[in-house]
Structure formats: C-alpha cells, structure tokens
Image 1 (cartoon, each protein chain N blue to C red):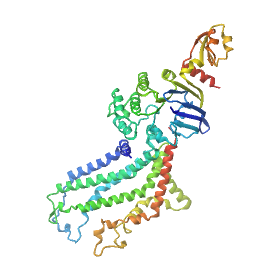
Image 2: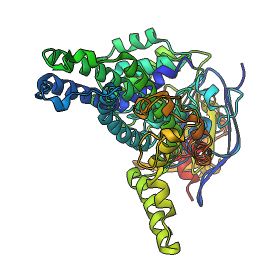
Image 3: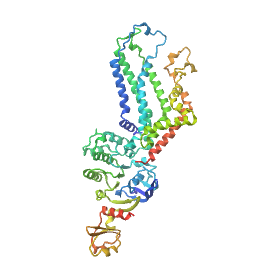
Image 4: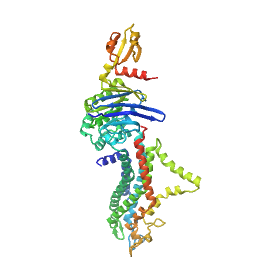
Length: 305
Length: 285
C-alpha cells in the first residue's frame, strides 16, 4: 500500500487536465463572482420579500449551482481518462517501462479505475465545495451593502445547510460510482483492447447494438437502458416523484408537522437501501467485475509491444 | 550460487510463425551473456518469456521462479531496458525518480541522483525534451540505482551515437556489474559488445546455434587463413565455414586440435563477429 500515493500521482502527472480543468473552472467562477458579483436587484420591492414560515433553500441551491460545471467537466474528463488510460501506455510503448516495475497488472488496472471512477469526481466535489465557500464569501463581501428583508446578505448563510448539502453530494457521488462502475469497466476494457481509435470503439458498439435491436426486434430496450440510466439512478438513490421532485408522500416516516420544502435537501431525501435493493445495481457491479477481470487479463497477456 | 535462468524446450508460436523452437539454455550468476542474432531471430521473444511478458510453451525458471506467474516478485529482482525511448514523453526526470523510488523496494534514490549528476540532464526536463542518448542515460541511471540480481537489456543502444554507446557499456561494467550480478543483453551489433561478454548465445530462426563461454572459444574454434597449396589438406579437416577474401581462403574449424591445423597456414581465434557470421551462414538453408 506504500506505493499507492505515487501510483495515483503518476496518473495525474500523465493526465494533467484532471487537476488543471477543475482548478481553471474554480478560477473562472471566482473571477466572475469577483467582477460581476454585485447584485443589481432592487430588494426594496415588496415582491421579493419572503414571508413564509420556511426560508427557501438558498445555500443548498447555491452549492448545487456551483457544483454543476465541476461535475459536468469531471464526467467528461473521467470518461476520456478511462478510454485513454490503458491505450496511451501501449501507444507510446511506455507499457514496457511500467511493466518493468514490481507492480502487478491487477494493481495497475485498479489504481486507474480508482482514479477515473472515484478520485476525479471526488476531487471535483472537493474543489466545488471550496469554490462554493470562497464564492459565497466573495458574494457576501461584494454585496455587504445589500439588504434583504432588512438583513445583510451574510444572514442568508447557513453552515449547517452547506455541510448537509456536501453530505448529500457525497452520497450522490458514491451512488453514481457504484451505478456507473460497469460503464467505467467497459471503457477500460476498450482502452486495453483497441489497437487504435479507442474512442470510436467505445462509442460505436453500443450504438450498433441499439440500431440492431431496433432493426431485428423493433424494440428499444437497450436505448432506454443506456439513456435512462441516470434518471433511474436518481429515482433509486433519492426519494423523488415522477416529476423529479422530492416525494414526501412516499416516505413512511415523514415526521409529523414537517413540510416538503423543509425536507427537500434533508437527509430524509436519501434512499440508500432502495438503491442497494436494486437488481440492476448488483447486475451492473457483477458485470463491472467481469469486465475488469478481462481487462487485467488482457493487460497481462497481451503481447503487441 | 543458484542458476539465474534455466530455460528448457522453450517454444513460442505467433500464428503459423514459429518464433522459438525448443530453446534451452542456462545462465549462471556473475556472467554477461550476449544473446546475439539477426533481426527477427527470436531474441526479443526469449527476453519476453524470461520477463513474463508473453505466454510460451516449455519451462523457464528465473531466480527459481516461473516468470508468468511471479512477475511481481521477479520484477523486484530483475531490471530490464526494453530499448530506447520507452520512457513516456510526458514524464519529468524528477517524477521518474519519484515514481521508481515509490514503487521499487530496492531502489536507491541517492545512487540515481549520483549517476544523473554525471550527465547534463536537468531534473525538470520532460523525457520528450531529451535526446535519445539522454533518455537512455536517464533509464540507465534509474536501473543502476536498483539492487537487482539480473539485468535484461534488449538492444539498449539502438540508435545511439558512438559516444553514448561507449558511455552506456562503460557505466554498465563500472557501476553495475559484479560477480553476483548477471546481465543478459540482446544485440545485433556484435562488435560493440565483444569485449564485454563472458558468454555468447547465438540464436537463428528460433533455435540456439551456439551457446559458449568466451574463454572456451579459443579452445573450441580456430580460424585458419590457409596458405596456398594447403587448401585441399585443410578441407579434409572439415571446416564448418569457408570464405574467400582478397584471394585468400579463410576456414573456420570447430573442435579441431590446433596442432593439426598449425602447419596449414596462419592460425588464430576467430572474433565473435566472425563466428556469428559463419554460424548464421551455415544455418541458412
């Protein structure tokens, strides 16, 4: 295990975009807040006053808003990384150097999976969290003179909300890692197998399968399977109704007197047992295991150096 | 001390092409063995089998281990340089040292720094910015700092200029080799390594055609530049190779006592290059 940190670092040396891009996004966002972050809104207008019993989940929405560009970039980067990670070392023949070191193929493959599936999204989450903190602080500084409901903007901040939102994001990430593990393993298999154009190999077979299914059976089961994956994950991992909104009614133990707004970004929203009870999740994990075993085997025995 | 490599009936087939055909040999510690053959003779395939990089038929034991199943344990005691330029272009010199220091239990960072200090390679440079010669120097610095029992080199100086080639082999002899370490190197540039080797292993079309210690060559092989008039007499002693050069006939004999040849012309021990060319021509159909 002593070698693990350096093996992880090695991946980030090679794929520098993995850490440069999220930092660049953070820089751009913070710069934008610093320059354009002064609220040009007339809060003296009565319509903007909120008099309800429950304040809107402002902090949560800000945190979620900050995170979106980071997670979009991380998804694209992780996909590109996983497609390239075992192909690149064969393309430049450096695999002969890596394999001359006392590191097993199993370990090499698993470290790359760890980076692509877990560390890239987690890194994005950490940088997004820090950015949301810094960005919120910047917003408060830039708008110290703005009053909302007669109070300074700093009063809108709620550390507990921020922490809770981080926990929800972390839970969502772990759920997504488990859910997308077979996809990651598939990309790695393509990466270790393709002689050239791994991106084409990664994308063409699924598309072909969908077309073939449509032509032969006239159905679109695979297409729905691939495209509906994210939606299904959301509905399994979170208590959502058919509109994608928080589904309070489905909760057996909705606390008496609580209201839906209050629970929208609460821990009540998470349904880990529901996710873990999903047959599709476990089938996916089994498939991921099989694909990974094949990937390790190919890296070990493939001899086209 | 135990045998370093023991290969018996090693065969390897790529489709219909038989790359190795029942190759058997053994390597003792403290030797520098040249695996010499023409391009495509099977040299690299032998090395790949030894390093556990390719499946094969037959049996190979390296340091008492079967390479394909014990690659990890083996790689902590075996080093190899495949050929120049397999260090990835994006890697910096400092990172290369950090990485090997991190994953290799027998790596001595100080030693690597010392070796690098004798070169003009800067720590911050990327491999892609270095010349081919410098990349080899870097790779060698990393390898020399590993306390390995077996060093495997596959055409290590391919494409390098004479100065780098000479420096490479000098460093190997001065900084790496001792009586407990073993070097197995492949090359087709026989002259380069002639004075370096303790043993030669000639390979041709997947078969071993000569396996001998350099010290034994003098007793086993004779090169006779035949005096005019003695040609028939010399032929009667069954040379295994005959060639004409500037009107003179040069014959190579194996296991023929020097006394029986002495009167027939000018006698000397053939160079490895002479032997190699002769053996390859004899083996050719």
